Length: 121
Image (cartoon, rainbow, N blue to C red; front, top):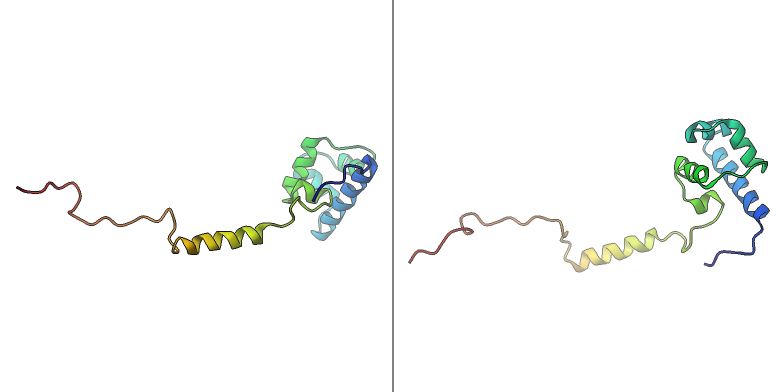
């Protein structure tokens, strides 16, 4: 899915504001909680969400990390490719079955007394 490069800056900021407000509400959080969680004051968060100021990239990343979401989700977008985890899990299970259910990290037991011994003449 290609991104819509024709979106205006104001549209992107409105999506960001609505998305963050929705996420906070769904989790029972307030702007002050977000502010404390990312290490800023509530006035900054209020200004960002009321479109009076624009957070820099560092604050945006801190918000996404604090909320445990991707940057795309923070801006109300689906990540490119959508949710691929079910596909990845299915492929991993197929590979596991093809390998006979044997993990590559599984340790094999050595037969005692066979290694390191020389044949007697």
